[in-house]
Length: 428
Ligand code: CMC
Image (cartoon, rainbow, N blue to C red; front, side, top):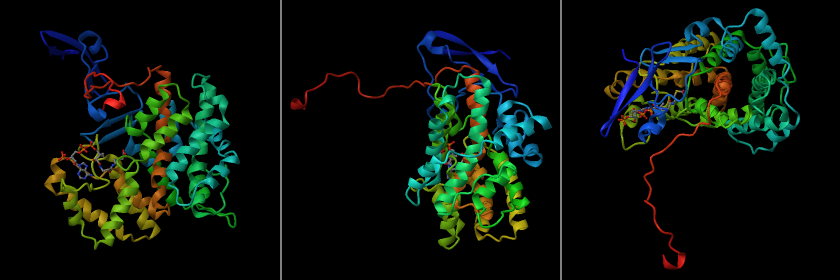
């Protein structure tokens, strides 16, 4: 097959190179098109635009395939830990035992946050959404580590900043929860692994020793792994584009947290549970809500359904569904919300509206039910997503910087008023 595509415009034709990825994904390289023809391409929402070449995550949306650095999500979720996967995403290879130990050590000795962070947290009004707090606190880390603001520093300095961010994000996330309950903040216990330490900062109390349940640790490891990267999604693209201006990593990740917050992205996990609660309170009639979702005059959407890339099934949802049943069984929890979720899934999957539009349950459909089962409150769900997505954001930020990518700056087609003369206010 030819390695170029041809565009006919006016009486001229333009040959454009075709780039083929390792999994045979082909893309037309249009970077010189404007210079040669004056044309730009228009793709609102970047539905068909590759923003970069990346060696981190591969998704085949039609086949329901997701892999990190070549390793399938199924194998990683089954066998790995969140820290090992973080190392893999950021460094490109699975670590040896010694490399993982040193990675864990470097992270665990940085989990403490500056005491002044507590003052920020205390100053927020009650009921503040924890995503807003997380976003601001991560951005605030930049004021405590001015030496790491320049993204062009040595690779050792960049690594230290990355480890610091992974370490402190767990503490900050858990403290946003403690702030909401009014309980004293729990300090990190660096003898524990990352997930157990996070759980003890969330659910531990100074009055007694907290021993994390291995079932919960395992489920949380899986959830974090499943969320760890998802190529050029909304928040990751945000991190890359902010970082492309050479903004520091705290500012870039903080912007990504903001993008993740929205209910069409990471905020969907909170929206799913709220929707299921609403259906339950309304008598549990799943069909009524399916019809609402199908009604073009009703803005209601079935949260946790549909995905920009997956048009067959979301492999993460498949793994989570099994994990969800396991966790509920092992913890002996009977959640009526789960019955409504299953009912909704069955009805939607056999309805022509959803079949024709290839709308399937996504990762957020079941993750909220597990979070609920392990005691994480609904408004913390998206914080959990952010915690999981962090190594992906970091890996993508690093790849973008190391590849010396130019500043992200899309073009537009202007559709406003043509040029006109200014009219003084007295004559309008
Ligand atoms: N419920 C009802 N209809 C839907 C839904 C839904 N959840 N999702 C898409 N549609 C319809 C939409 O109305 C449109 O119909 P039509 O062709 O008749 O106009 C068609 O399906 C295509 O939708 P779209 O909005 O053009 O698709 P998109 O690729 O721009 O949006 C999405 C993808 C995930 C934003 C969207 O499916 C959605 O809003 N889902 C609910 C929110 C959600 O669960 N988000 C989490 C995504 S997974 C976690 C993550 O990675 O962030």
